[in-house]
Amino acid sequence: MKLAVVAGTPGSGKTSVLMHTVRDLKKGGHSPALIKIDCMWTEDDARFRRLEVPVTVGLSKDMCPDHFAIYNVDEMLSWAEEKGADVAIAETAGLCLRCAPYPDQCLAVCVIDVTAGPNSPLKVGPLLTTADVAVMTKGDLVSQAEREVFRERILEVNSSCRIVEANGLTGKGAAELAEIIAGWPEISGEMVLRHNPPLAICTLCTGELRVSKNHHRGVLRHLDGFTEYTGE
Amino acid sequence: MKELTLTIRGGVDKDGRPDHIKEIEIHSGEIVAIVGPTGSGKSSLIADIEQFAQGDTPSGRRILIDGREPDLQMRSDPRKKLVAQVSQNMHFLADMSVEEFLRMHAKSRGKDPALAGRVIELANTLTGEPVRPDYPLTILSGGQSRALMTADIAVISDSPIVLIDEIENAGIKKQEALHLLAGEGKIVVVVTHDPMLALMSSRRLVMKNGGMTKVISTTAEEHRVFKDIERVDSWLTGLRETIRQGEVVA
Ligand SMILES: Nc1nc2c(ncn2[C@@H]2O[C@H](COP(=O)(O)OP(=O)(O)OP(=O)(O)O)[C@@H](O)[C@H]2O)c(=O)[nH]1
Ligand SMILES: Nc1ncnc2c1ncn2[C@@H]1O[C@H](COP(=O)(O)OP(=O)(O)OP(=O)(O)O)[C@@H](O)[C@H]1O
Ligand SMILES: [Mg+2]
Ligand SMILES: [Mg+2]
Ligand SMILES: [Zn+2]
Image (tube, rainbow over all chains, first blue to last red; front, side, top):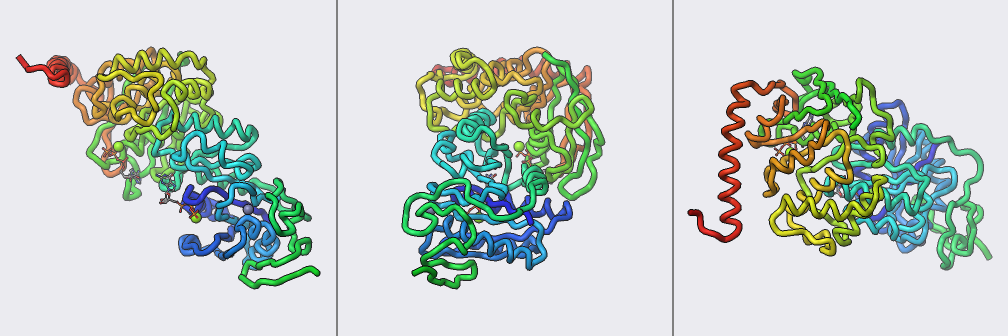
């Protein structure tokens, strides 16, 4: 099983780009399964279902959607396995820019909208700085010079990432992203986070980097909404 | 400048029917126009070239450089980019000054940031009200933005392939702009509804329903007509300037 975590600010074009990417993956003989993580509500699952691939939604409700995404990675993978998929793709809500929900072995994709202006790569934080791939969207709305300046700004904060210029409307760049996902190594063994989550009140907040739910205490909500308390 | 050949391999039109034109080769130093009705796929063809499509766009076309599929770096790294583009929709969204932006753009292309001053100077020869270095980029008018991007391409981008989408509607001096963009020995592909720009080219590619339907070489008769249009155009340009300056046509 391969895992791609697709993060990025709300409305940056994650779903639009993924719609095309998943089509390309299917064309290439892969079986992707999609997981949308959000807080309250989403209609992305309805869009994804049109692709005729397994789709599920995890709502974090009152919890940080990124933390929720992190400790549910195991559940996402076993769900995708059950559905016969060979690639699990998780689209996150991307609200809190302090944490980055990327386990070390996943392909970390940060979708970033060029219309947010060339200073935005400096503001996005670990979501971008720890990503393997930065997908630039909405380039059709600005000049070539502005796209090039934006690209330079991305490289200033993450010099080793691969940049894909994509268009969520026309599908430009989707084939390239599909190729990167297809070439990414399979997951094996335990995963750890790339970046420390910010200080707060859960086990992750106290610095636990191991992804598996076994290592977490407190109130934990499962992908399917079941909420449990573990600990003293 | 490096000599090269740009090849467009035909794909399909909006209904999935094959392009009539199976292949067209364009060589350094040539200006080719793209003509056709509104919505016929002119901008889409330009987009295919800009991203060096390899059957991965709706048209399924392929773009080759010197007969080969270009490598990925040539597609994306601005320092190696072969293509400079003036697109149809052009407003700036970047929250910075004209000079700061141009310096940053020069840096992204691996050029001297001091070229910014030269770009502004050149832009001001194409537009009415001058653009100043300390202006916020976002207050520039459509015409000023295009003049600035035209000068930027001539000075900073300086790529061997230049793609232009409808420069005539920008209210800037179109013929001067085209000469500036064409430079010495570049491949220029210009989308246009303007008879003068269309006949200035050596060939024109006709689009219909998303497909490439035919290629017409500019005839001797058309070249004569071009000379007439040029005279009419300079007369019109003079009139436009008089009116723009708030004077009365004598
Ligand atoms: N012009 C333009 N619009 C785009 C592009 N990509 C996406 N959009 C538009 O941007 C809006 C948001 O796109 P989505 O794909 O829903 O964004 P998202 O990141 O999945 O949004 P959330 O899941 O709500 O965070 C939609 O209206 C898209 O049509 C692009 O490349 N160019
Ligand atoms: N070969 C094609 N296959 C599928 N769709 C196409 C093709 N060519 C163009 N289209 C679609 O047709 C629409 C109009 O195309 P485009 O914007 O390129 O037209 P245009 O000639 O530039 O029009 P205008 O003169 O108004 O600028 C776009 O939505 C585009 O995606
Ligand atoms: Mg979405
Ligand atoms: Mg157009
Ligand atoms: Zn958080």
